[in-house]
Image 1 (cartoon, rainbow, N blue to C red):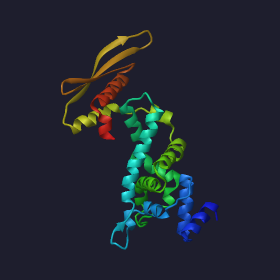
Image 2 (tube, rainbow, N blue to C red; image 1 turned 90 degrees about the vertical axis):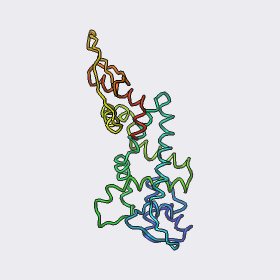
Image 3 (cartoon, rainbow, N blue to C red; image 1 turned 30 degrees about the horizontal axis):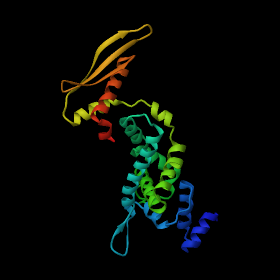
Image 4 (cartoon, rainbow, N blue to C red; image 1 turned 120 degrees about the vertical axis):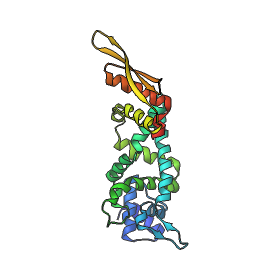
Length: 249
């Protein structure tokens, strides 16, 4: 039996196979031995296998998920703020959204082994595919309560972000800002159009100037060596101006 498992079992006096499995899993995922093992039991318990405590309260991981979502968002925001000191609020918001969106968290949770410890109704085999990211957030909440914010932030940066995200690739990935503007305008019942208002001929290529016009008002102007790039640049500036990225995150 690994030393870290033996130490905590000796402290708690519990030696069930499920305890051993959970302690080992948390150690492998987070790099430390949990102190309050009950927090992690609760973090891995989905509402489909609700357990009622002595006071009649139905215990599952939803409260820890709520807490973990906030702590994870704060830790990622903290990291990105320091990593990119000259980037705008819109850029930082978009980057955070790419890291902590539901699909990304589900994939990350599966990769680090949370699927091996989550408790759920196994009659519904599709359920695990959509609850892993929620369970990861609940585990972040458990770590916060068990170890504090600074230790949780180190976990987020060193165990989640650094080994699993290529930030350079994430930055360079083209975001379809044009579609974000269109979606926002549809939701706000506004008319939008994209216009190429100028084309300059250079020695090597042309430079296009595009405008985003919302309800007859020019909101963003962008430039690029193709119509598409100019429209994307104008759309990005529109997202910045109207804080669309914040609204969609």
